[in-house]
Length: 305
Image (cartoon, rainbow, N blue to C red):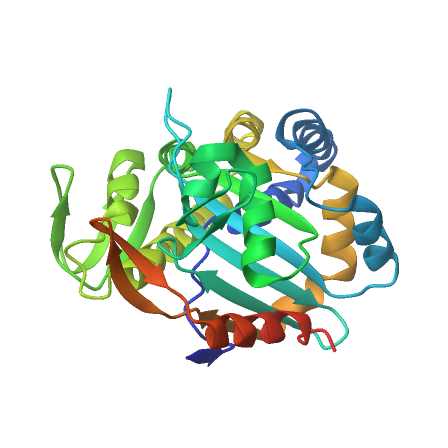
């Protein structure tokens, strides 16, 4: 199912990059914030992976060609690397001013590259971090990736508190982690926001509903963050992002994307890969058929044509 322009964007992690841009645009603090962001990205958040050919990506940037970015949302806690419960391949096409988001179901059964076994695709991160996730997704879809962005969901709590809380419009009454969320307008602090986006089992739409709540929360962060004027709070926001976001992009890459690829958000297409559920050795997997894989590969590789 394909949804155009006004579809519900199911990515909370890439929006953190927007927070960087938002922060960098705030009035008299521009220079100091700019310097902090550059330092944070290059010294704290930058983590290259061997699976991505940076020279090829560099040439694509120079020629303003389409780029493929893997978005990873992980639930990483102290002492536990966690799994990438959200995996999206985002294709940026500046020539036609458009962007495509392809969601990969986390339970998709595939070969885990570097591990030599077949397992759920979201386990690749648990086995080998971003490196193994990138290599596995490239093999699964038979496409080349140019960048990845990984964000830890645990940082969401700090982010919401840093902007003074947020307001969301809840479509479904439910309880999670001891918090009750009524239908309609809810004002949330960090702990409540984290519980709000984690709920999935009570939602008839499952991951789709959870992804929508993630979008609401990050929009709330953006709305609240836009009103920040305290340099102390702004720098705190940057520190939180630096602690919870990792990417193979350097600050210069982000600048290039914001300058030469900023037009892509005007036309957004999203697609959710599909398959059939199956138990193998008492473990439930999503089996993605070959024709679905071929269709998805064509969607990505032909998008910039």
